[in-house]
Image (cartoon, rainbow, N blue to C red; front, side, top):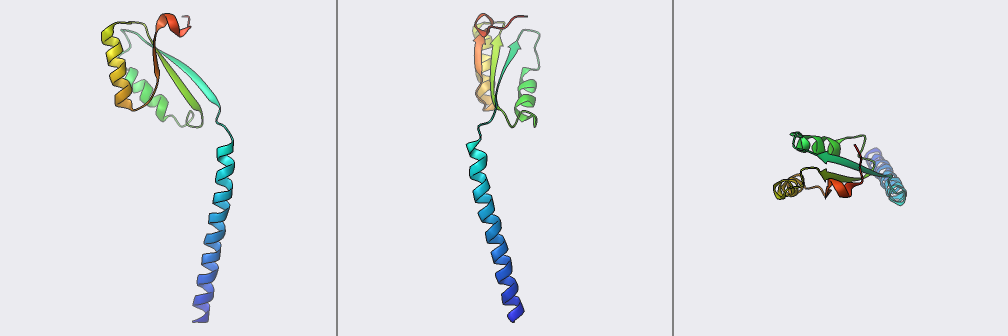
Length: 108
């Protein structure tokens, strides 16, 4: 019986030490800001797979460690394309900027 009690105390102490180390290291991770990345994606009439591309960008493991900011430059710039992009933003549940191409600052 003495061995069971001693083993339980050792296991509880090990679990306690693990939790203490996790608490101490979690504060360290939050104090380090993530690098920022700005990305511009151009939406054109020939771009049929924008939803798929944005899903891949947001789920990419390579970009997960970044503070990612995406701007979608609307080359069509019609009310319908703006509504479609707004609906896409709600569907993906991600926030990205939608700007007409003139304001995006990009060149081809």
